[in-house]
Each structure stands twice: as C-alpha cells, then as structure tokens.
Image (tube, rainbow, N blue to C red):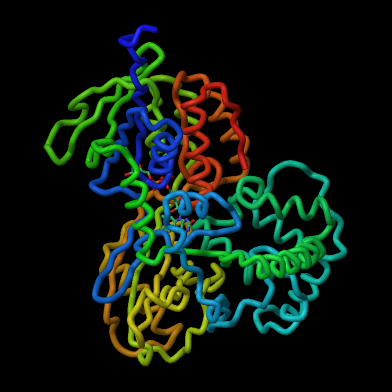
Length: 490
Ligand SMILES: Cc1cc2nc3c(=O)[nH]c(=O)nc-3n(C[C@H](O)[C@H](O)[C@H](O)COP(=O)(O)OP(=O)(O)OC[C@H]3O[C@@H](n4cnc5c(N)ncnc54)[C@H](O)[C@@H]3O)c2cc1C
C-alpha cells in the first residue's frame, strides 16, 4: 500500500444566506461530512435572520421569531443534537388561551377551536363572537358533502365553503393572518394546511375529523404522560432563540462564517461554481473578490436567488421572482401589570381584518414564557404586516409606534407610557404561498435540479415555520453530499 498516496481534496461547499435555513444546512453538512470545507456567506453583520434575541433592562425580547411548533419534529430534533434539550421550555400551562377581538373587545377563542375547525360544539354554541345564524351555519358543516374538485383553493374559500362566512371572518381569518401575515383569500390550502383538505376528503367533515383526531390524541397524551413525554405544542429556549443560532455557529469550522459578505454573482465553473462577493465592512466594491466551490447551497430569500440565477436560467429566475414577500414589523412594549386594566390571562390576542385594525396579533410574551419579564411586569409583542396594512411600509418608526400604541391603549385599557419599547422591521420577510404554490415549487425544483451541484432551500418553498426551514435545509444538505438522492418533501 502506498502510504503517500494523495488524499482526495475535501469538497468545498458554499452556503449563501445565514438565516436558520443556511445555518441548518451548514450544520448538517458538517454533521455528515466533517472534512468538507464550508463557507457560509451572510450579507448582514449577524447570523440568524428572523431569530434574534435581545436582553434589555431585565426583559428578554424576541425581535422576530417567538417560538416554534413541536408537532413537526425537526426543530426539537436539531435542539437535541446540539445539546440544547435542557434549555427548551414550553408555554406556561396557565396561559394557553388565545383571545379574539370582536367589536373592539377581547373574547376568549371558543375552547377546542383549532386553527380552522372546532373540536367541541358547546363552546362554539355559547360564544358571543358569532351570531345565532353564524353558529347554525357552522353546525351545518357536519352534514355538508366533501368537494370533489381536486384543484388547489384558497384557505378563505375552503373555510367559507365548510364553516360559513362569519366563522371565517371572526375566527379563522385572524388566526391564519397572525401566523402567515397573508390575506387568506390568496393563501394556498394545498401549500400551507393540506391536512384540513385531507380531513374533508377522508372524513367528509372537519368537525367529524377533528373529533376523531382529538380522541386519538387524548389516548396518546395519556400514553405520553405515562411515558414522560415532555413538550406542549410550542417551545422556546431559556436564553432566547439566538442561543440556537449560537449553538449551531459553535459547531461550524473556524473561519467558515463570512459576515457582512453578500454574494453578488455566481458563475458556472465546470461542474462547480465561482462566487463573487464583497466585504461590506472592509468597504470593498460589489464583486470585490471571487472564490471557487464544488457545490452551492442557496439559502437566501427566493428573490435573491432569482437575481443570482437570472444569467443561468431566466425561466427559473422568473418563477423564483414570482414568489412575493410581505413586510412585517414587531413593536415590543412592556408595562407594569397595574398599568393594564385587563388581566391578560392568555397567550395572545388575534385581531380579525373586519375590525379594521392595523394589528394582526399581540403576543402576551411574558405570560407565555414567564422568564421574559421581571416579576410584576408584562412584555407584549405587537405584530403587524403589510398584507393587512400596506401603509406601514412608508411609515417611520415614530408614526408606527403612535398608531399601534393608540390602538392598544383603547383595546386593553392601558394607563400611562410603556416602561420599555423597541421596534423591529422585517422587510420582505414573509413569502406568500399563493394558490398554486405547490405546483410552482415543483417546477422551480425541477429546473434547479438541472443545475449541477446546486441546491435551493429556505422559507419560500415548503413551509415558513422554523421546523420546516430546518427540515428543508437538512434534506438539501444531504442531497448535496449524496447527489442522486431523491427529493422527499413533508
Ligand atoms: C417577524 C417574524 C416572526 C416570525 N415568527 C415565527 C415564529 O414565532 N415561529 C416560527 O416557526 N416561524 C416564525 N417566522 C418565520 C420564520 O422565522 C422564517 O420563515 C425563517 O426564519 C426563515 O429563515 P430562512 O433562513 O429561510 O430565511 P431568512 O431568515 O430570511 O435568511 C436569509 C438570509 O440570507 C441573507 N442574504 C440575503 N441576500 C444575501 C446575499 N446576496 N448574500 C448572502 N446572504 C444574503 C439575509 O441577510 C438573511 O440573513 C417569523 C418570521 C418573521 C419575519
């Protein structure tokens, strides 16, 4: 055996974008192939994208992402692999009830109403949120035949068809709007909540399907309690979600992360890629410098991917560019408990569009997770989106604050000024999964697969939530390392 035989050079892989998708992709590459050379390019001077925690004046403020869901396994699984399991905390069991605004007042969401369907009819029958007519129309759902039309439809059209207009406007629209920051009249059912269409198909009725699911879940929960399963529906990390970003970064090779380094252009180079970057902190001009890689993982927003891919496949670029993104903003406000008349004994407030409010939702951040505020204080996060309120894009922070605080004072009976406040703007941050999104993404992925050693991941394709982003990125990393591996979604 020749001991001096040359070892093959390690593969050099570039990851473009340092949000949770790019981080999860880079981490998976290192996990599976510790010898590969990774460069993670991030335009901003920090990693994490919408994961960004600040600790200020005794408050733990999440400027973007609040928590993530545990019913999809990939967020929890990554935290476990990073040794963060002991830091995971779930929402306070005392404050799991959401409120809905109805005619300017807060009402508890009827017990058992889960996103798009009721699991219990009695709370719906007695809620003051719906009229008698609206309640009867909801009850009719049990008897309506399922649709035979297999084409995608909007969430709004599906819910109006099943539960009626009033339940849609007063209950479903605010819940969906708060999660997707999108008009549900445009939001694709197949790309966002396909399980509800599946329930209709399989059980004939959402109410019937939900009741059966709840019965199974109750049996499972009993089993989980007996086996000591730990988490509720949502979790965060004790030190804030930036600690997930830090834990991933610590696992990446030294010098892998290039902050303040936007990728300006990508060029085919045989079967590999040449990336042109500039280093903003060093004042380099765009296209300052080039580097060659064996493979590229594109984890930047789809509109950035569109610009970079335009010279290589203009149809792919046009399809990517057709995924629009809406802007959002979060105003964090803290008060002494005694400044607020309402007891705020819940996890959050959602506001229907018919209320003509700028606010999409208000998370009762320190009720959900008590460690986020000192004793006797309450931290709120007011969430607004340009899909509901396009004027917000043109407003400066002062105007935005005045408008939102004014609405909140009236809604909650607040006395005096906040003791802490901050605003975070998230321009073009929420991809809009419009009707037909699934087919569009299939088309995009088929064309992207024709580019050698190239993978797309990020929140524009298979789900905007953190677990979905992690899953999509990890799968893409696996495909980069093992070309030929089939794409599996879901
Ligand atoms: C305000 C807000 C609240 C949210 N709350 C929740 C929540 O509570 N729970 C949940 O599950 N999900 C939540 N989401 C959704 C979730 O946070 C996002 O879908 C997810 O973080 C997207 O991650 P990403 O890495 O795909 O994209 P991004 O976070 O957008 O990351 C892309 C990165 O690419 C970088 N980039 C852009 N251009 C270039 C370039 N040319 N070169 C190099 N880098 C570039 C950007 O600077 C950015 O850092 C929220 C989103 C927002 C905006």
